Amino acid sequence: TGATQSSTTNRTLVAATSYANAQLAPIRAAFPHDALTTTCTAVAAMGATAVPDPSGSGLAATVAVESCPAALPDTVMVTVTVYEAASPSKVLVRMPTEIVVSAP
Image (cartoon, rainbow, N blue to C red; front, top):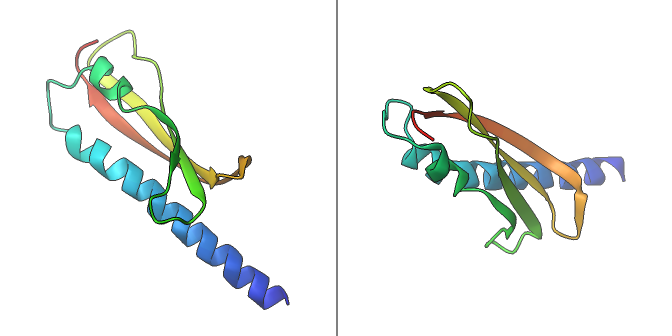
């Protein structure tokens, strides 16, 4: 029924959002906004593709890091995209955050 399908979709979106947050949490912790020594290279090293959800949900995540800005200090956008591992083109959640960088 429609209600059952909506419930399943909601559970999937909640799981995807939770997984995206779990991917961003260590990045935010490693590079707090008040840090004055964060480098673009260090942030770029956090990028990853097709990271499977260890809970066995069938979800996967990509962590994309934008290029270093020309003028520093500034911010670098880090975006976690969560999708069904079997259908990478079916994006469930896209969660961005900005990381302050002060050196290349």
